[in-house]
Image 1 (cartoon, rainbow, N blue to C red):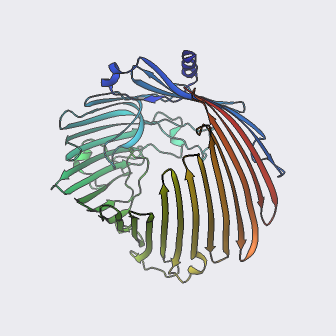
Image 2: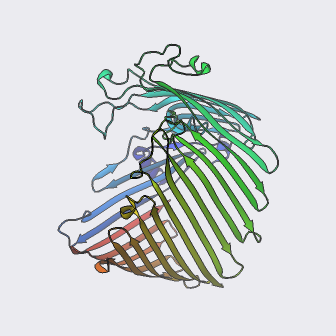
Image 3: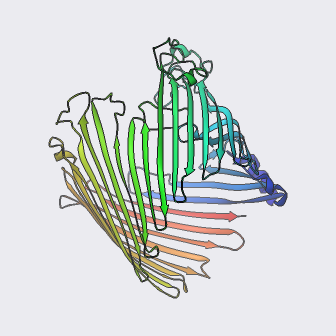
Length: 553
């Protein structure tokens, strides 16, 4: 039976990616298969004039991991309402075997050299990482992006044509994870022949060369220094003419490897930090600067035009029962002084956690985000100036009582959030305040597999247009039978909405689920759900049922 299941998954698998340490090959079982198969069917009914779900639904889902002499290959397949979902098993295939200090990447893989050069970007190709002793070496080559041809000659924001993009990278360094220095070179370019009628397309082929340096040094036993920096030469249009002397500054080291054009720009990015780690206390300071327009084809996304200072202390007291941590950051854009105004941000946060030897515990969080602007190239207009503060504070006290196999817990969650706008022309419409509180009680008895949970909740939102309130109640109870092989849970919830003191409807729900697990790997589950919803405009109800069978092997 098991080998029939193996054959089934081999033919219906999708996107297998695996990697294994070659030192374990001889110790592993020759062939092994683990996974699950599940069959699910459901029913849906509503009083609405239209169905928000299929009235009858069913699905077949399977997942498995096939192990061949220690190599692990995952598979999955699904079939739902006459829709089969399974791709070519070799559509995305990756192999990353490792042996001692050598790791090989073949097929679809990702590698990381530094935060500003190549950082976990998926490519189709090959790569190798070597770390013999203190030597650190990495190299990759492959396709970073597959071409996307135009559809029927039309440009669409949902299907933008794209050139095939190829790239390679090299990392050479020395050291360990605690002390190292790496030099990185990464280059990528679009294949201008990969799209037809490229001259008429709204997209243009690009080219990029990035050179970076990363390192970490343990200066003293308690003090370490880390840095990452990179310079990027990025050509937006490979069809633009080459530059002449004095037209565009590109460092000489890069021009020997890269042909600058009038659409080329050289920018840099980096950050550095000092980390002091003492017994019970640590503090980390970081400085980050990213020039506007900085980009690397080895990154999926990065926010440019940023200068940031951050300090983050943490403290542990009373044998670790009290922990205090926080951060304070100052950030601004317009690092090249080319914008009309400069936007400043002050970001502060603090966290306190107190665990007593008794039943009481307390957690608190506070954050303060301020934003304002100052004049740069132009005078600042008070009517459009941005100046606001967003404050958030949460207090979570709790009581926990334990007696043998019984546990009682009472938790209160209170949160207050507010936005203050210091611009007199916009504050009347933008200022908001929100208050949320939840009071929960839970009880669990492990002797008879009984549990219950009740909760009260209240939310109040004040805006310039209205005051919205929502309050509700939740009640849940559960019981296990036959040594907890059969589980049953029932939950009901009720919430009511008010707008400016007037009723705006309610939601009433009942939820029941049960499950039965057999030692042989078979499992059954049942779910029933009834919801009644009333708003200012309509009333409706929804009923759902679902039955599922699962076999784990």
